[in-house]
Image 1 (tube, rainbow, N blue to C red):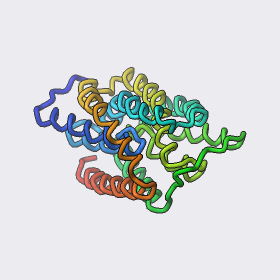
Image 2: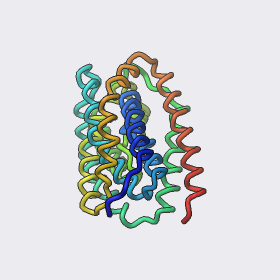
Image 3: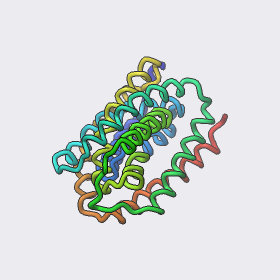
Image 4: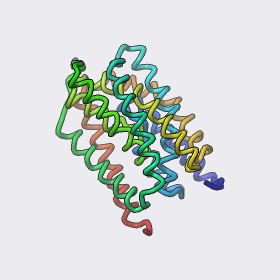
Length: 259
């Protein structure tokens, strides 16, 4: 990808999005790609470039956001390890598809992805004291969840937390906080794997990734503290409302951008 000239407006936008993404990452256990990708498209990147650059920005964001959860004992290490097995493979598959799928498919795929996440948040409330009950069946299920998450993460430019957090609670019984901490730890290897593949394909804007990722690091601790203070239901409703706003924005962008 050729080097892109960034205006002052673009730089300010990237830094602001990084701050917001960092707060959301700590609060919801996500990488922040659901706001990074639309913002980068608005700044002029293609959907393909935005997805790849977002994934690169998620590497430092998820690392910083995971630390408070780890220190508080809000991570299921075994579940995270099983998810990583699938995510690393899935991320490389998704990164390969990212170079092949048309822009229109990527844009509307992102819309459908956000719609699914928004609906799931309003229909289910996790328990604050739930834990993952590991067995052979649940272990294979976690690997499968990781595989699908890795593919989606690379295609959509997200860390995968918007898939893993509700899935860990709804399917595997994890509490909302353990789901968030485990998700953040899980997404680091997958994001790194997908980013290396995207960088090889020259899809990553490293300047944009740094402008977003570095400010995000500053805000992640505040998000994790807020998650601890709020109830599971309030956290879930807030996340559903947040994704719904992004969905409306993404539909607008998909409709107005030329094919």
